[in-house]
Length: 457
Ligand code: GLU
Image (cartoon, rainbow, N blue to C red; front, side):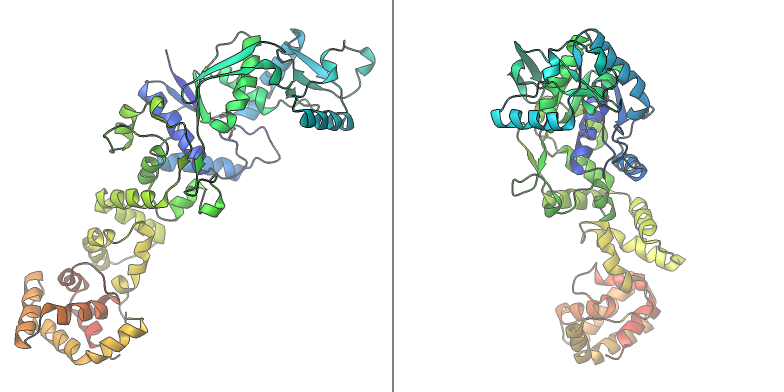
């Protein structure tokens, strides 16, 4: 079979984490089977859809590297085809015009809620009335009233429902616009979708949508309804749990590769394998390994994956990422300093935006330690810092010579490295934790180092 999948987001808000994971699953499944992965923007709700949201979807997919190489389909451009299908269903008797006004509809809704029965309009059994021609109507699907419908879902398993519980859903509104329930089925058919992989909040819809497909003798796609993402506390993921917009994670300093790898592992895993770069993931991916229970979003795990990813990236790539993000313009010396210390600095952060905390001491000429407690300590050790500064000024600048100078100072004063190391680090970086001291001194260069050691606190 020639597999065709689609990611079909509604551009009514930002691209959320759950949507992004759905995109990843669709992408991997299609690639694994050498099939096609398509993106369809479901912009049927014109009032709530926005250009920004569409742009955010594309930006998010690009960032994760799961964009489609085929033309993007915009659902609203297919309206005519959806309307045609609604009328075809009407002509074949599988749908009917419903002339209920809003009061009547409200009463029907109330009755259906109270009795726990699906909505079936009284117009289901009435003949067409000519004098109704001018009245407004919607088109409803005439659901089968007996029998059952079974879906053998690739994630949820085999589920059967009685058709009597299905409501006669609206497929065409009174303003002649098709509903999502119709548009999505028609588009799936027109696009030749073989596998519908989406959130399990659509599982109920599948039992209703499949009736349209059956009435029209179209091919029924395979379904895979994937569980939603919950927060660590087990509740549905919401703003309360932190950012839910995919691109917020970009802004927070996560890499697209780390996010891809993490989202993939949310509710899916391959046994004995944790190397989830995109090529490997394509090979390993199988819908059978998607868990049936909701996945829990765990920021700690994401942080670990991100930190690992940062440390495995080429220094030149991560350097470019940071420079672009912070719009840094560095002179040659600063560039060299930053690149040399970057691998060590990365070991200390989980997101690369945290490197910003290092910019002061890395690049400022007149940097001095800002922490009041540290300042007091530096004040106490003023003489020692100046002495070391003096010795360093004398030495020919090389890693080896710097090391020897410091060692000589320790010997001369009968000290240990612990007596000078932390205080030197504080004076040079304003921190107690930083890359190797000798590397810092070497990279800062003689002038900056000596100035910082000579500072009068
Ligand atoms: N547009 C729907 C959504 O964003 C998805 C519909 C589908 O995948 O069939 O939830």
